[in-house]
Image 1 (tube, rainbow, N blue to C red):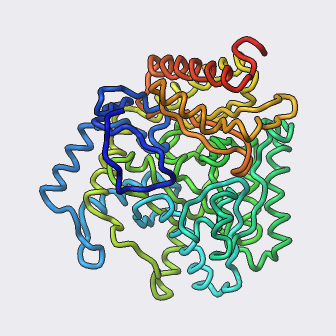
Image 2: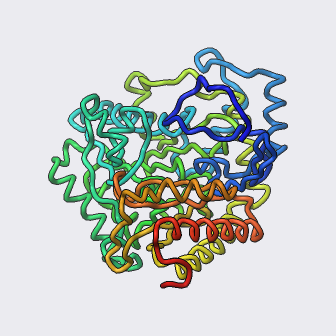
Amino acid sequence: MSQRKASHLFYQSRRRRPVLDQARGVYMWDVDGNRYLDGSSGAMVCNIGHSDERVLAAMRRQMDKSTFGYRLHFETEAAERLAEKTASLAPEGMNKVFFVSGGSEAVESAIKLARQFALAIGEAQRWKVISRYPSYHGCTLGALALTGYAPMTAPFDAMMRPMPKIPAPRAYLDGLDADDQATGRHYANMLEAAILAEGPETVLAFIVEPVGGASTGALVPPAGYMARVREICDSYGILLIHDEVMSGGGRTGRFFAAEHWGVEPDILAVSKGFAAGYAPLGAMVAHDRIVEAVLDDGGFIHGFTYAGNPLACSAGLAVLEAIEADGMMANAARVGALLKSRLEGLKQRYPFIGDVRGEGLLLAFELVADRATMEPLPKALGAFDRLVEIAYDNRLIIYSRRSRGGYVGDHFLVCPPMIATEDHVAEIIEGLDRSLDQFAREAGLPGPGAV
């Protein structure tokens, strides 16, 4: 790494990274000329790859016209066109779009809209938003109250009102068949039990990631789960919020992951791949009946300075057009199936890989000490961090979290851009194989072929 002066920036730790020089497609280069394969699309953001000229050209055109127009002063063509396009991709009746700058803002907006809807229709007693454990819904205090990831939430418990949680449907840990409708009903019925325990008249909404994000590592719901959740919400008059911040944008092979199960929410949040990292952008999309009721009651008491920024919206529209023009969602499904099968192949080589899961190019694998019991690796190994570092040294970028709520367990997201090819899959698997072999030797774990 080149010699550098001390940085004035700070984030989570003092760890330094190489200085980024340029990025093209699925690759990134540091200033020393080292090339990295972006195997996690950043933080599952760069869905269409880096430096797509069509998006850059659209942003240049917008820059020549205006880079900012405050929403209370002007409507902009870029924001109007993107809102129209977004509504066309959303379920029927979800025609109202509220732009934000990121995923946390999108979730925060969703729960505030839900609360104001309850007030507008005379149900002020509804305020509880049930979520799952583990989960991650954002870092603002409102979104964090929904999050089930102890290291992130515990320091701030005194500053917020944590919301009720139900277990995430991790059938692979509970020894249940994820393809059995009974399994889906088993986990979904935990929502009904929580509603009854809290008092149905006090519950405002249930928020769920259709395919899990960082905290559950690309968790796919068991058969029947999503439909039963929708049924339960309807029966108690509770709003269903889909957090599609990570799963939306086409990564799973459908623009919104919930489309795989034909289930429609009342409100949804999307970001990350929505503008694919070209500009800070996200959106809350809501059903007409919800927004109209709130506007009739005096308006939506909420907003962000950069909501509907024309430069960000021009980037977002160009991203959506590129996804459609190049058939990227179909590619994500096809290449994702190949990558998943190759990850399953690694599972056969390394006995400490306990699970491979996901949909399309939202994939993950989890490490365990014992496949039979799914006991996690010893916390002291720090596998979630160490394997990422080894892969990084091998010029492969992957993303990790603790799998069991934040303190133990290790899973790794492998989510290259939707433009990935079979050759890129081969390169990813080769890098993972080399990295897993090194990690096994360091940790004293059984190596390839010891299954």
